[in-house]
Image 1 (cartoon, one colour):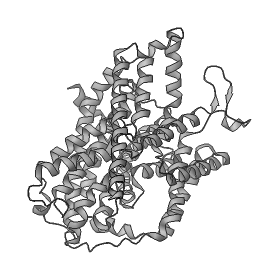
Image 2 (tube, one colour):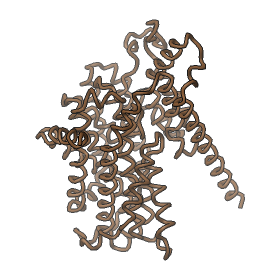
Image 3 (tube, one colour):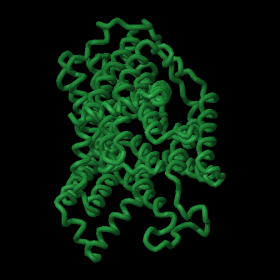
Image 4 (cartoon, rainbow, N blue to C red):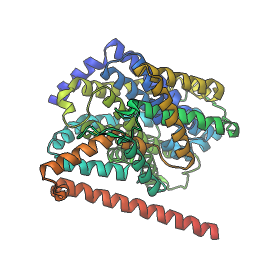
Length: 503
């Protein structure tokens, strides 16, 4: 009953005119960004974070807008997958397997509507799970000590991207780069300047928002400038503008199976929507592919990954809000926003900021309904956005990034730092090194160092305190198992690829 009462208070926050307008705006813009190939939810949220600062939004309003953009991007990623056979983001890769063949048969509108319904079911399931389980996890996290939090951060760094990354070594290298960047500034214990090279601008370290916008938004512009001339995707005919109801209600139990699997994958730090979509598709193929129709335009091959990746996106909010550890790349960006707004996610957030937490959860229920209503009748509009010329899109991204970053501190130095991070992000992407671990290291490096120092201070410098707690031992065990699995999968994948090359 207490949860229902708190959720009711959250709806009172979410239904204010300002927050409702921001939610609808976030859903619309997020769907458009998600539909643009390659940008995805991480870049979409990163690009629009400066807008939250430029508008001077309250923390709860900014979080509602960006969360709705997040959900909208997850919905929109399927559009280019189905129409162009080009995934809008990584989780939408699985949707191309049956979505594009279905569109080629003249059933593009049906495929888009089926995916919209599956996205609604998966995201709603995740939001219900967030409502029920997040307070429980927050209550359990109160028992974490400094050594336990250090172990939790180790698990986050070791597993972020490790499950789905093709090269775990590159993923760990990216995390180390992030930790190195986080060490720039004044030492929290002694006040000694570290790696500032005599620049007073670096005494406070790097602003995470500046780094994120540079790494994602500016590097995206550089990446598009290099690759835009090679794009030759052609849209298939849309066909029926609004599909019949009986054509979209074909998923059946695939909705529930995909939602459950995706939600579990979303909660796991480092797993996220990509694993949720993949696992949901694999399981559904084993259960439903009796006639061998998967890969040829089977509607359940669309339902399962779409329900899975949208459920995972909601599940990823749980560790971010309750533990301060992001469950996905996008929630890592949102974590940076909260920290910049002087809001510290973690187990005490539910008691200190109940208005923010429950307002966010309530807005997600609203966003799911808005997205479902928006995505079916506006299919034609969203697909036409795919033909937006690059020379129109990229200057807009640059304009938003420069104005937003300058409005944060009115400092031209931050603009130069943003450009520097953009070049770094471009280089890392060219080397196939994920940017998410870099951001995670930048965001959590200081907290990791503080908890390590606090634990050693309690023990008088005895490092055995780091493995003295059952919680810490459990977290280290999970870290070892996940890392071992990641290296095994990567090694096995290379071995199979080498054998295929020899044959």
